[in-house]
Length: 313
Ligand code: FSX
Ligand code: SF4
Ligand code: F3S
Image (cartoon, rainbow, N blue to C red; front, side, top):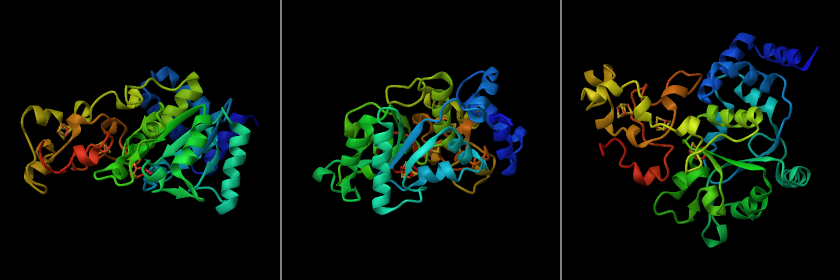
């Protein structure tokens, strides 16, 4: 049996049909902004990977919601798919090793893959007091980041915290938390969102494996395929906005009619993300569809700039 057949057999053993898998690849290809002709090539990246790049996944100041979003995604197999295309060498949340053993694993992975691995960074880095606000195994987040990240072939920041600082960096920010790129004064690919949509990480990695390069980004390091447009520009409630049909109270008739949430503090006009099209939980829904205003969770400093939530700007 060739590699591809083995792959499909593994999927079937997990209860995923070829059809489900192709449906996922179609969705992923569209999210990546590629034409439908790329669907078989995207499927090939999973089914017959030419390479499985090593990944070192670092956790800093955060809630682990990004890892959770990735692993507990309702696509029953998205997590498995990620493990098919990547060789995850170090990930504190999912690895069996702990304590000194975990530290040794990180050092071994660095030695073996220096210059060749992808670093996925999750969480913000405290920079005041010599980085004293966050430590793992006696070393500060800052020291760990300074050791690991310059050795990576590319660094992808997952979540608003790693991208821009997130909640840790909210005023008064006593620890001096910053996004990873800012703390290390270097460029990173940023996949913000609190939590981010896992499809945007998968799309970034598949882009790298398929086309041999990371996707085009904006001036904040965000892939354009996912963050090129505002929520407002893709929102299905947009016609209500134009017609000035607004919800002014939760639970009202207007809320039931699905009117625009602008007056309930929706930050869709200020927020760049693809939630209305990518949606969450197997394409089930997203905040505005569920009747909740967008709080701008993928924007820099959203805890300071987008608050008070539920108030019209
Ligand atoms: Fe931040 Fe990730 Fe928000 Fe949490 O770990 S983007 S706090 S959902 O999960 O970093
Ligand atoms: Fe824009 Fe929000 Fe209204 Fe949608 S609900 S149209 S994103 S203001
Ligand atoms: Fe966040 Fe707004 Fe999307 S709150 S999840 S960017 S709809």
